[in-house]
Amino acid sequence: MSESPAKSISPHWLKPGRFEALGPAFFTYLQPTPVPQPHRVATSASTAQWMQLDADWLASDEALQVLSGNAVDEGSRPLATVYSGHQFGVWAGQLGDGRAIMLGETAQGFEVQLKGAGRTPYSRGGDGRAVLRSSIREFLCSEAMAALGIPTTRALALTGSPLPVARETMETAAIVTRVAPSFVRFGHFEHFAARDMQTELKALADLVIGQHYPECRTATSLAGNAYANFLQAVSERTARLLARWQAVGFCHGVMNTDNMSILGLTIDYGPFQFLDAFDPGHICNHSDSQGRYAFNRQPQVAYWNLYCLGQALLPLIGDEELTIAALESYKSVFPAAYAQQMLAKLGLPENEADTPATEGRFALLVNPLLQILTDNKVDYTIFFTRLTDAVAQAKDGKPDFEANVEPLRDIILDRASFDAWALTYSEQLAQVDYGQAAHLMQKSNPRFVLRNHLGETVIRAAEAGDFAPVQQMLAVLQTPFDSHPDHADWAGFPPDWASSIEISCSS
Image 1 (cartoon, one colour):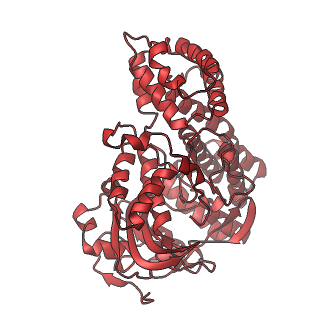
Image 2 (spheres, rainbow, N blue to C red):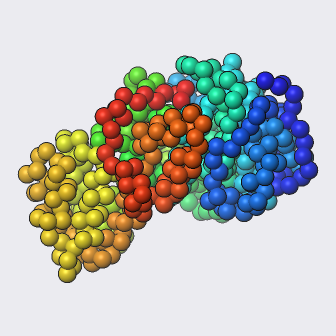
Image 3 (cartoon, rainbow, N blue to C red):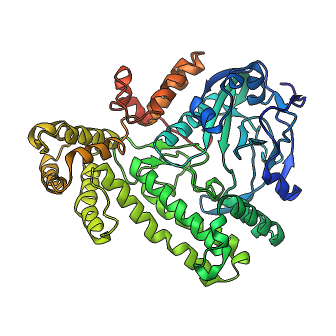
């Protein structure tokens, strides 16, 4: 492997980011480490369009070199940022971008990172590389989440190299180009608060508020305290994010504070998983021996992480009671957002003017349904897909549950419990327009999610040199509510071997 720095190319699309203006306490300048024989694995035209990036350039050899870390725009000054954080509930001290290098910022204000482009001062003994296996998972899931309407960092491109990288076995290197309005994490604030670097803490908060939360400067709530309002805004964004995770059956797997976005984005796709059989206590991370990040614990963990952020911001807020008050809305925003998401999956619009009615419907329908799914180990995504089809097939505005719901009864062992629930559901559904209910369900219940076995299938193909399935999977995941008859098997039940897949923090 060459240790020479990446070569410079003429200015094209990047400039130094606004984060750089914070000063050297926040980052270290460095160049990506080039890889031999880089090649494309996949690109996201959707992300390129979102960024207003020229498609012809993205397909060029120049882009391949830049997105592999072998060349750098002369207008950018690559850097890695420092942060700290709590990992599995324990203070881990200084962390930082161990294998992420920020190339700069686009004219539209998007920060661009290379993940896997070599060692940084924050690699903590690691090699700074990413492998093809984990990079495919991150690339695909970033784009899948965006298509599901879930806030997330995006993936522009995935490149590979024959460079050997040692993990549990010897694998090959890959680099993901990640894009976001900001990659600032809770851990950035914890880092400076833990070191009593209040000048730097304030500068960071002022930058993020100025760029992404300007309304906090003029808000009159929370005694007009801009930093308290900032904490509350982050809390509420995080609450809405978690509601979407839970509704779609997404397990993050490693919700450390350094993996929490200050913008309420899904960030750092490692040992994630979409649920197969519904299991509230499912642990998707093989490294999580205590089950701290089990599926049903994610909302509470998010609040715990926000509490850590509140402690970090306390020197700026200046009032402990005000800090606690800024976190309080999470407890109401999350359940309300989750109820809205789950009722939409049932085709029942939330009645914003009548919160008790919404809460009543949730208690009447959602809680009993989730218990049925749990007791019968029902596939989460397929259940809601079949329920959507049953409502969409309603005749003359009245669904014939004996006919339309039979595909649902087929996947539930305790049919008596389901039939009782279905009767209650049909009574509630009769109070709304069936056409509107079906439309709401069709845009709320994806047919395709990135299940572990699907990811494993395209990974195996890519490791054998066939990258076409990655791009094919991307196309399906970017339109997850469509039928895609040519790939109907990807919407089917997972094979028996899927349960043996183990994903850990090293993935």
